[in-house]
Image 1 (cartoon, rainbow, N blue to C red):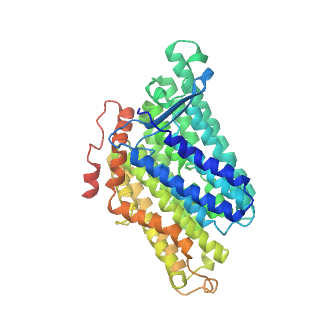
Image 2 (tube, rainbow, N blue to C red):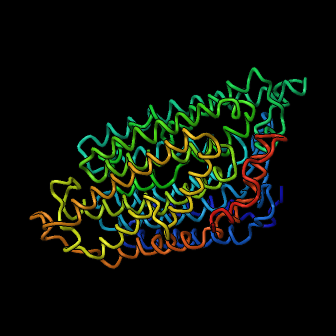
Image 3 (cartoon, helix red, strand yellow):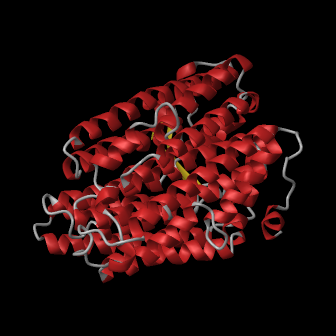
Length: 513
């Protein structure tokens, strides 16, 4: 681990939180919005600075900060980043900025509180990506619950928004209990491995726990406890129902945050597989089945949807299934494709949900029966939608193509049935998006659409930056893959032990071919 000479990560985590507190003290709504926007912009610059200081050739944790927190339990304030987590920092900052701009005029009551919650959620989410102490991680993980509860319950657009907020919270609390049990088992196992007093030898540090042998009889228990906690958040079947409910009842910019930042899948990569490597290898088939079933089931449900917001929610669940299939393959293509696809969610899935929000704000509905001929009335919105829609189905030239190509290759190397499942899922995704697009954007103009106005400059600005990144990553995917390559190789080595890496070291060459 390389120590940080300046507490950059702490600054990144604390700045939005301090901004939220400052906004709470202000009385002028207009001034609060400007300060919030400025803080979000500075935050994006700081996260880009962290990427600039990151050394992609170093597979270990970098910019590490370490301070004693609860010495009696050996709990530490330990944060750092590696190739897996580094790019999620600017993506989180960018998405928060997009959500803030998208909701600029949509929030009419308690707007300062809403702005403060967005900044606080950004701070806590960045803490999840940086935390290297399991207790600190769990603290950040649980702190997202009240923030999202209020964002859904107070500013949702559906009549059942409060019930949706409660449903989300109950699901997350259920998963949190499972995570806490796994963390306690890991800490106690470390104490037992030293054959000393438990209280003084507990360990919650991820680097230490990764080096602590986990007995065979605990491997499966820890793996499935962590798996259960993370698939609820991902979400995967059968714990997926909260996301479509939130998409219909919550605000679209809040839903964009949930579909764009997949903390559950990140947790699988960061904690579940490396901390129980033997169980991860032994039960990778089960993880692949869960991912494959989610991919097909959610794709079939999405195909039957007539509401754009609900369609996008099920499409997001289906894409998560594909990512999990790649992770379960346990090869370089799979892990790099999974990380790239998770980054793509921030750009593509969230942007599509924000576009749905722009339509909802103008029309009061995203039901297909109220749409038709949007391309003639809203050409700017249509151009943005088509780009993100094509990226979501993996068209070459967009960032979806290299990610899905890697995931398909990983599934093919792992098992032919997984490859067939992934291909069927891709066909379902394309059929879903193209069918809805034809009915909603082409054809005769609906009387409900005829009076709508196209994207305003602020709304267009929200979509321009992710659109540029969609094309840039699609054309130059190695710029992203190079950053996580060394960490991905180390991640695989820690799980597979002395087994030969299934992909070799030529991921970039595979893409170029």
